[in-house]
Image 1 (spheres, one colour):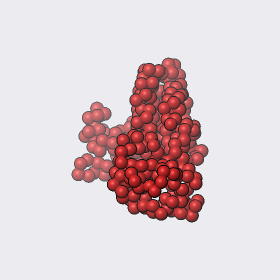
Image 2 (image 1 turned 90 degrees about the vertical axis):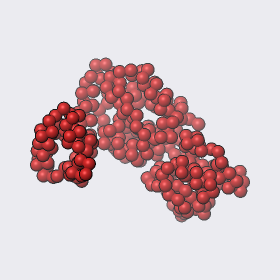
Image 3 (image 1 turned 30 degrees about the vertical axis):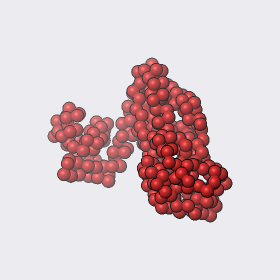
Image 4 (image 1 turned 120 degrees about the horizontal axis):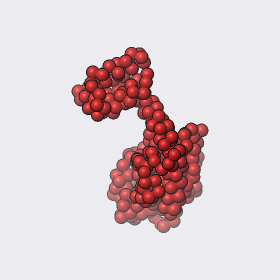
Length: 298
């Protein structure tokens, strides 16, 4: 197995076609097919199967694809690190953000990175916290902002700010203006995100401490739909003020603070514990941390 074979395999798997990969790589299709065949022989596994549109990875191929991306990214980083040691500003940096955080800081972040690291190639990716963690550990991303990152020896976590969560319902759905005890959520019709959404995990765990569980009416991921259903009186949901603002969801909704205990999500900046540090990533980390602390405090 060599780097060329891995890079050929990744490109064929991602493009889903030998012919498209051949054109992209400027490699004759027979030579490309031969390299993939040699890889399959060496690994004693079928890596690609044909479908009606081209090819797709087998189960073994999916595993190799994940590992190969990490290997190729590590090699790329090695070259970048040598160059970065000389200049400190060139190379690539990949950052992951939850969509609600991106609304608050992405534009300012890109401007600041462009001002201070003008020669760097910056990639900004959106995803759920669980997705961002997976992409971080696979080497696709260099650093991410997450909600309530798990305690793991594979992650280096820097706390940024905390975000309070509120019970959200239609206007007129609450009996008074006071806060709502957490245990009351067990008797309310709830519209919540699917696990492993960070808010959902926190709700389940804190209610379990009280010997209670959610009364689920709808379980779905799209935030817009959750707010629409709550606005139409189908039930209640739980969200931060920032999340509501990012979706423009304030009209027709009322919020009440949750107490006993309060529900708070930690917003954290996360990097792989095992990584090759370079000046570019250190600079990007400093910029991301600085902007997050300034723009996420509410």
